[in-house]
Length: 341
Image (cartoon, rainbow, N blue to C red; front, side):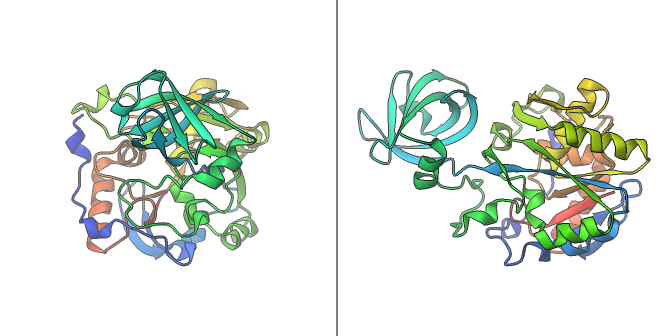
């Protein structure tokens, strides 16, 4: 399977740079999973596709203001650090720019020493393991010094941090937002519940995989980076009950999807679980957990386009993407959404 199978043409002006004023006024492209038929809607109309007894699964991860700008202690050279994954204690896997400036034993100072990061280990492709030193509570220091880690294709400054968080974000630890969830409002979620749809939460902290392009020609040779997930006992029981009663599970986002499919793959059913997943979903994958998917429009040749293609068909998905380009949909993190069901 060749990486070019998942390529499509995207004019740069369709990459959304800012969020819409109202979350649920974005466009929604409906695609029939079996036939590829499509329909143009507004996101607040997503409720028409839900049935009483369905369960909607949301990823409640919360994005950290994890992009820091500091100075190398020895030379005062400027260094940017993006915190990705908490390994253990105060040790974090990070991306540095420029990475070549920081070797093992060297340190970066942020905010005149309010946070000091010391390199413990060099990893591949600009990654490092850094040990953080700070007074008080790390989250408070990050709130004071950090910026939201917007993807590199967003050039505009984000004035309101909350617009890169879902309205239900709770579990702090993510390096990027689960962007399909950005379209939901509290009011829309209440309408979903009023229709008889149950809402369940999982947690997957989005990490390095979001920032790494596929660098191999043969898709089968790509290795996903691990990300940490949690599924509670209550969520597992609700999802098992949903399946047992013949109702549907609709995942909001590729992160929720990867979490659910990991648990069912590893345990045979939904169960209380936590750990690291590097599940790679691409065409040929057999879905055992989800029956519907709400997702944003993803980068060409990305693992996320592959996941969406696996849930339907590559040809149907690329046809839908071509329609979205022609219809001037907004793409990527602050862009529009699609539902496949």
